Length: 415
Image 1 (spheres, rainbow, N blue to C red):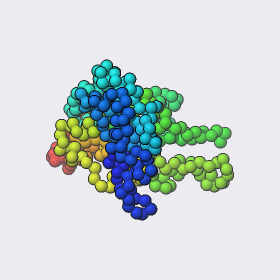
Image 2: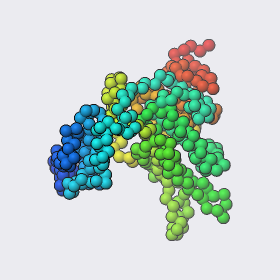
Image 3: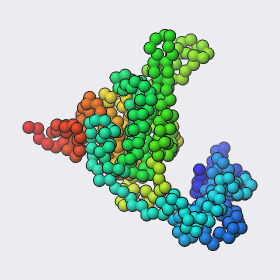
Image 4: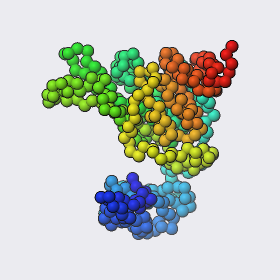
């Protein structure tokens, strides 16, 4: 969706720059916010509502060729009472998309529904008091001990379903999905209202056990998407992590077709993974978190510099030095943490793995909470932590001992 500022940007066409707006380029009958407000005013005047209503910022949605004009109560400017949707091509009111007049009148008269009553309540920006934490154990059990709404961002890569027997085993796929539902539900409880959960996941290939069977590919991301929506999250983005060509040959997929070139045998070699972005449902707009943050210096210092990812296609090399079989690269964690949190925020990774999320959060001046069920991988995390000056002593360790100081990195003398 384009707002007024985007719709009036300079557009490049065929190498030439033009000052025409998106509306002008499309040849719309309604070409500006002023014209959109006028159409809405004429409509509302028929019902004698103009004296009670002011307009928010009209937005143009050139995918559907419509203008959306927000309606606000003059008595309570923060209270939205509906919107008028206008056909950009004909300037006619789109009654199917617009808020019905009866409902607008009820909201103006004070008989507002629960949704709008909730929006009027003054919200307080919550700052978590949690400290850096690393815990050994089942993430569901460990999250259950955390306070509600105590985390600002969740970024994780869950265990694969039986794709790597040495990493994760479930008897049935439905058992795996049931486990992930519990994780997502508990994640929603500890995540602040209106904040983000980002998950790195991909379809997985179940190799055939004999020549008489076919291999199976399971679309895990799409099943998890359904669970996220059912558990109170809103879908925001599907980021595509693209790996270099040749990265997918390790799966063996596509080799048969490469050799024989027979129709029906074609199978694409996977070189992508999904990084799915969800937001915990909230009536608060994203701008609310920026405007109401109690430390505006942190907001300012958290701004993203040039060179950020403009599209949802992220080309990142999967190479990692980690001993973990499914570690994601530090660059991926860095981008996600930078784009979806402020400095000082708390970043949670329920499936800590080799500790990449925690380490990158620390390097970006965020606090971190990381859980890992495997003692083997916990050793990897401790080895990584021990190489960061004084970090190990500033961590709350749960169900596991703090790593012994090396002396070299933390400034302490060896015994």
